[in-house]
Length: 81
Image (cartoon, rainbow, N blue to C red; front, side, top):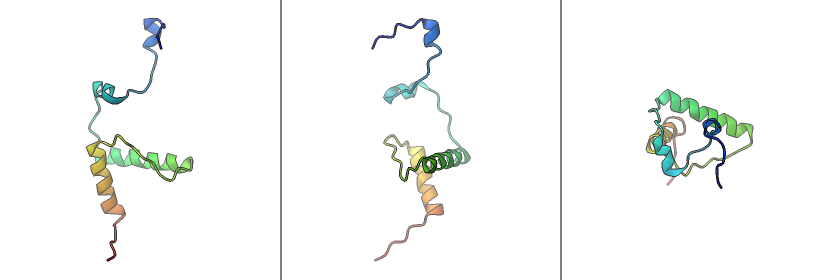
């Protein structure tokens, strides 16, 4: 698909960066409070639209560590033998 828009108009466009293009952006290091805030917003919005599960194939190590801490703190697992 060819982009024939003028350079001035192209500066106004917004979109999603995929794959390695995301590495071009500076992403701030998220605090525990910011991770929790984002998690709560995601859960709230998922419930609002009736979603019962969510999957993210691009989970980064920081987010994975957050979810592990969250599970240990709020959802203790019980193993039955």
